[in-house]
Image (cartoon, rainbow, N blue to C red; front, side, top):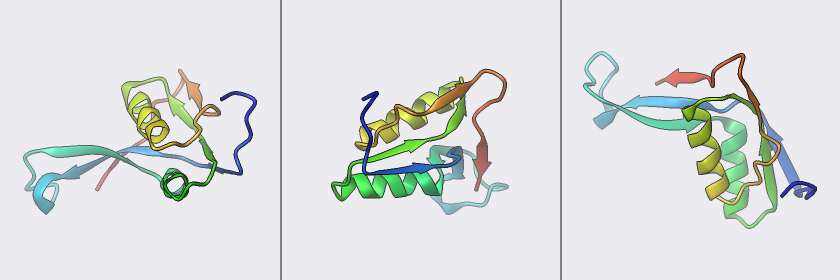
Length: 96
């Protein structure tokens, strides 16, 4: 969608998110679930679900976490054409 300007654009960091299964603490968890987290991407997804023409941009690493994040957000109907990638730093990760 290059050249298209959405009604609203959010920008900010979104990170790969790892949370323990079954509400265990990190020290008791045997497995972690993978997702992502970031207020700006969450807002963009929420707006897209409400029918708003919305875009999100950020700078992510050139790695599988970034690919998963971008594909998921795009799949929610958010324009991700402005996302930039860096080969100098990895996508952030967060444990919760």
